[in-house]
Image (cartoon, rainbow, N blue to C red):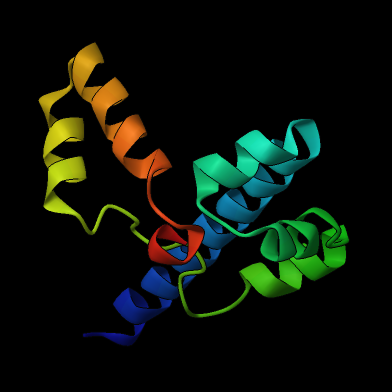
Length: 105
């Protein structure tokens, strides 16, 4: 992998991190319980995220590791979402609602 490609990839990771953190903060500040559910995080994590200053958020986003996680480890959920029907989306929401935060977050 060339240095430019590697650098581009790190910049993209940082952009994803910042977008994720800003979305998470907005979701949590507007409706904390719904934000926690949609993100699959605990109340303690939600408190930390919601209370980060902008400078802290930018510093955290600068990590070279993705801060978000692909939470559809279960093939049933992923298959239901890929089905794209409204019933499939409802079904996947029901399955995810039944999982523990530690399991999906």
